[in-house]
Length: 442
Image 1 (cartoon, rainbow, N blue to C red):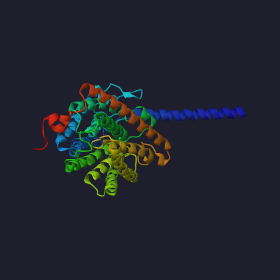
Image 2: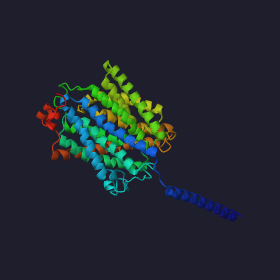
Image 3: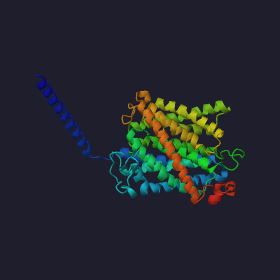
């Protein structure tokens, strides 16, 4: 009787397993055979978001940085943003996109199957936006690739050769940005571990912040740093640039949902809430510390809030975003104040805002992420999943170390080819005249 009962149990178990396997196989076959269909609303939103991100770089970042430098360097600073946008765009189309998002090769890099956008057409891709043309996703990511090296220029503002800037940006985008984008967004090894970076906290902000620190140290301080008057020459220009950045960030974060959907809405709300809180927090910290609030402080706080919430925007609630903005405003302000104690000349505070903000944002994602907000994400520590926080810590460490090493090697290579800094005479004259033979103002 016992053997008979055991046989019966085994038969029932095997039959059940076969039924479940058949159902699972049938579901997979159905999913694979379900035709992908372009949704015009999703496509329109991603295309508009691409334009938003373009506005963040040109004119947003160009004006933001341009207003912060001295009069003799404003054109040279703006020119750097324009040329980086142009060069990186072409590299992305030629082979950058394929290496970042092409078929995975061992979790390390994408393949060359999509060189020159071969195979990247108007049909959707099942991973990179099943309701938008593959080319729309490529275009959206192109804007991200362009803005990352442009952010770094703030660290060496007013003292780097134009040829060195262009060459550095091209090499950095290929050898630092592209691998990081693949590791986290393109199906690479960090993505397989479950890392979350909704719109670029690690890929863009930590990587550019770490690179900025290396650039500031390797190039050295500006001539007259600490003694000469180096206040921003045009704060209204900087504030206008801040407005374009804030505006464009709605597409930066909201567009990362890859559709006109609820995730995009929640990402935009989180983005706006963090920016507003960041501006208030920085203003309050500065008011308490220095006795008066400043326009530059409010602008910097807003950008700090925007940069910090970026990796978490599509995974968190509005209240979590306010908490992130509060921490971002106060911590990034403290980082700017402490910069003087470390002695490096990060001209436009890329490290303190984007580097520190990116680290806080990635770690905050590990705390505040919730599958209630985004079922496609993961729960963070505060929602019962401490493992995600550990993964996010790894992302911070890997991104920082990789960017520091890669940036240092590239700087040394560029220095051997063209030299990094302008001469003392050229620096005294200003980049506008010495590098471009033009003046911003008569």
